[in-house]
Image 1: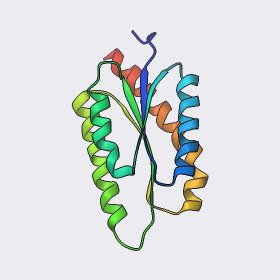
Image 2: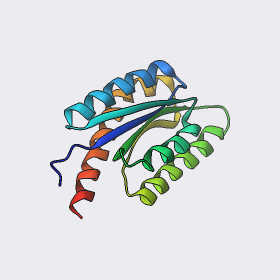
Image 3: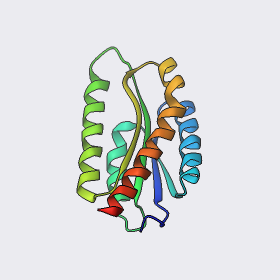
Length: 141
C-alpha cells in the first residue's frame, strides 16, 4: 500500500508573509520530491487559526496528511508562548484523532525574524519529510 502517493494539503499563516511564502514554495517542492500530491494550500491569518482549518482538512477523505506552516515571533509578553503551546498541542491531538500526520513547521514561539529567515527552508522541507514518512509507516501498521 506504500506505493500510493500521499495526498497532501498545506495550511499556512499569513503573518510574516515573506517568510511563510518561501516556506510554502519549499514545502510544495518537497511534496513533489517525496512523490506526494499537493491538493490545497489554505492561508489563514496567523498560527492561531491553523488548527481549525487543519481539523477540516484532516476530516476529508481526499487528504492523507497536512503541513502546518507559520511563524510565532518573539514578543514582549508571554502571548506567543501561550499561543504556541495551544496550537502545537491541538495539532498533535488532531493527528491522533484522525490518524493522519501533521507536518509541523511553525517557527517559534520566541524566534526572531532573523532566526526565522535562517530556518524557513529547512523547517518546511523537514515537516514534509516527517509527515510523508509517518504516513508511510502508518500504512504498514
